[in-house]
Image (cartoon, rainbow, N blue to C red; front, side, top):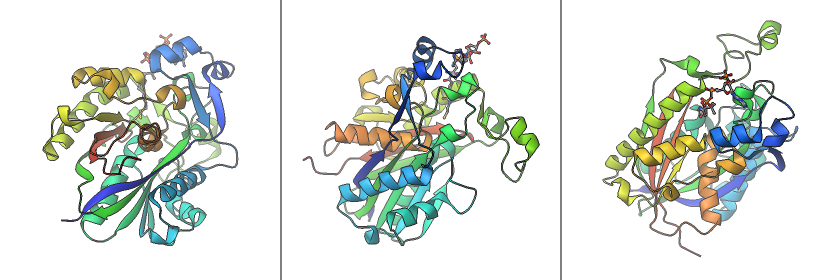
Length: 329
Ligand code: COA
């Protein structure tokens, strides 16, 4: 059987750091409130000339370099994003040209679960023999879609991108994946206007309907149920248990969510990776950015098992169990 294995990892975050004290100059909030409720201390915000495809292109280039591959070597590009550069063409097509790729390219839109969904698409293409080298990118500039006068949402998000190169391998890298969706409650987290249901108009802009709307407490309750459940299903599909995990790498939305999930899964808190303090919620980018942090800090070793777990608007959720097959340096 042909498996998919991670052979390259790349990351990019914009240069501009915006601290909680900076946020407190824009809305009525404080460093103390944001840190105690979310664990976030600062986030990165894309410059005016950086869109999601630009962030993603930088991460993709880094992943190619890490894998020792050239753009021509890639035969499929999958981009997870919910802040596309524009409604069409896809962010994947815009990114393809920026990186010098020539392969088919498409977007996956599953909000903050987009990277796990994209990973499933990429791994399946490899396992089915339809592709041998796939670039998977999670890129989001959600700060472009939040209302910087709404303190309930604007303090949470940051911009960034992360990427994996997946290659066909005899060694199993991507193991079990569990995905799920429940479209019955879109109002919990959404951007109502700007699509075909409510096209952009003066009225929608005046009412701020092109910005993220969120019921924070409902999202919180959903997340702390969904993450453990999807993790357990993906582990079962991999014939593994929670004890086999070296690292749980959840989508970075809120430190309190990560701590609750650790307790519910009976996992030591130091096995649940977190970098939310410095990046905030980077949506589709948060999982590959987290893996990149683990990798570049020397915390990943051949044979380690990672649980990559996402959740977000949709509602959507998903977990991928991955064995780290890269050789240690
Ligand atoms: N600064 C100061 N006060 C704030 C604030 C901010 N940035 N944001 C909200 N508040 C206020 C509210 O207005 C409310 O005041 P009130 O009691 O006078 O009405 C109070 O704080 C409590 O608000 P509440 O929404 O109950 O806070 P919370 O403890 O639920 O925390 C979140 C809010 C958003 C941090 C939390 O619900 C959360 O993280 N949810 C998950 C969100 C998420 O993960 N989204 C992304 C999913 S991919």
